[in-house]
Length: 77
View: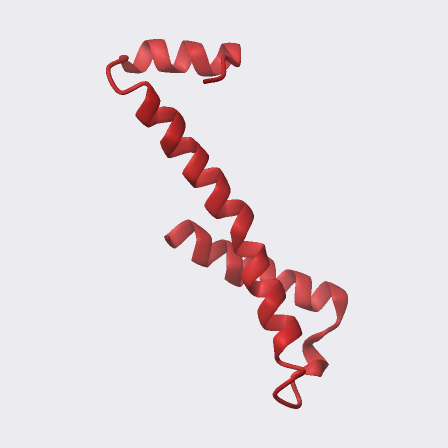
């Protein structure tokens, strides 16, 4: 949750400044575009964290040295 919120705030603020859509928030409908970009910027972080937990949950009984070796070799599920 924290990773997603930080990614949303930081990535969304960067993207809003880069696209120069900060001036759109003068009315209610203009607020939707920046809020939408802020929300969408959090999704890649959520997917990454979710994939990491799914990968580590699938290898629950494996020790840390074997996990790091498997991760370095690039083995998938």
